[in-house]
Length: 299
Image (tube, rainbow, N blue to C red; front, side, top):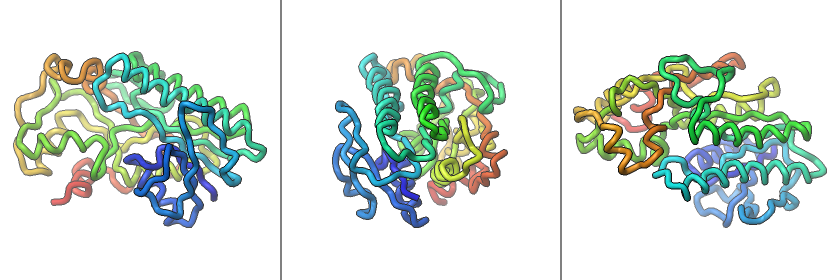
């Protein structure tokens, strides 16, 4: 298959490109400049997000995996929230519009979303059939997915993939968490009773390709392990993996000083189950949090 990947130089994008090439697919990627981080077999195509996107230079496509967007994991100022919105909602609108101008259109668009779609839901078990929540990230995801879904009007199968906390080396959810834990400064967030959904990077990459290649899948999929954990359980597992004890819980008011409005997202409870993936027959390689952390961090 001939793939187009956006966000190819990111934490998920790089191993995705590697895996697609390993499987014998052709890969094109959109970026501001050619990346030295990617295999030279991946074909570069210019995308300046401030200008209308053209895909005229891209060979006939079979599938698009759209991952590009401003990182969510940063202090949410009004300017940052604007950049997050524009990069994800407007960026997706550009991709769909560019596809609509192609004579030969791909059969599928797998477009990143986030489990933040569900908002803070306590102990409620959340599947793809659950309603959207409230708050900045939930509202963003609703609009983000709406733009991706417009590709259906062009006869394209659309799979919004709601990504949870991705566990992998060198980035993702663990990048900022591991250093303080290694110093013995890690602790649960507040009560620790809030649910955390997670997925190993390897399973995330496999799930993206599974969604692209399985024609029976349409509509949203949750990119999360079948076994979500509470924040307290996650904290204990990570502390054990780095052979440190945990500190006192981090109070929400203190973190708000550093992270602003984003702290509400960190303290939200999302007990997400990948019902669509399991019903479609996807097999997770990493079911347990302990095993996933051991695989990423060693030991």
